[in-house]
Length: 328
Picture 1: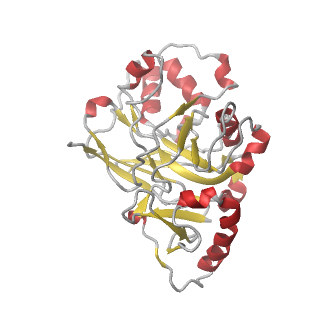
Picture 2 (picture 1 turned 30 degrees about the vertical axis):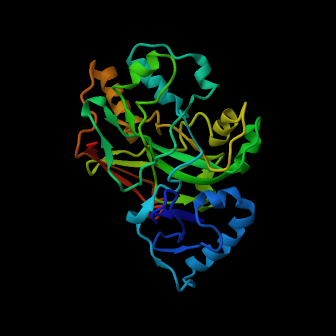
C-alpha cells in the first residue's frame, strides 16, 4: 500500500490512500483519519485498507481524486519518536579519516543512533527556513522505516515484522554547529533542525525483491540545484539493517507505534555513484586535495530526493525543497 497525509488544517493531516502509480488518491475516514490512528490499530485496519487499495489500483474507486504531492505533509507530520542511525559505517569512517581520527572498531558492531526532534517535521515540498547560511546548511538523503509497537529487548531476527512502512528522508544538518555541540558530550540538538519525509509512505511489499534483509536495494537519487549530486545504492554497504537498528533502539525500552527509525546518510564505497550529503563530498575533497571546495547550501539552493523503480517511475514521490531565510 501507499499512504499520504494531506493538509487539512490539523497538524496530523488527513490520511490518504494513494495508487501504486501515484496518480489517484482517496480519503478513508471510515477506516482511519490519520496515519497514526492506522498505526495504532494496524492489524485490524490495514487489511481493510488493502481491499480498497486493490480497488483503487484497478480504477474501481469512482470517488478517487488526482493525487497531488503539493498537498502532502510528511506522512507523519509529527511523531512520538524519531531515531536516526548511521548504518553506512563507511561514511563515518570517511569523515573520521578526513580529520585524521581513528575509528573505534566497535563502530562496526554497535550501531550509532541519535534521538531527534519529532514534533515539527517539514512538508516534502515546503521550503526549509533557516536564519543563517553560516550554520553550514546540508541535506542528508536517507531512508526510514515506521514501526508498530516494538517490545523492549526484541531480537533483530524478530524486528523485521514490526516494520510497517518506509519513507525517504531529508535529515537537515547544520554542519558548522555540530562540532561545538558534540564537544559538550551531550549530542545533537541545535545542529539538527526539522527534517522532511517523502510525500508517500509505502509498505515493504511495494518494493518486491528490492526489499531484502530489511534493506532497500535501489539507488537513492539526489539533485542539488537541478544537477545530479549522487545516486548510491541503499542496499549496498549498509552495515546495519533496519532490523538491527530497531533491535538496538529497543534494547532497554519499547518503541511505540509510529516510531520512525532512519538509516543515516546513504553511502557507497564506490564513490562513482556520488554522495547523499555535502559533508561527504567535502571530506573526499579534503582527503584528495587537502581542503574542501564544495560549499554548503545557500539561500535559494534546492534539493530533490527521489527513488525510482525499474521503469523509471517514482516510488515515494519526491522531496523537493528550497532553502530560504527565516524571518521571525
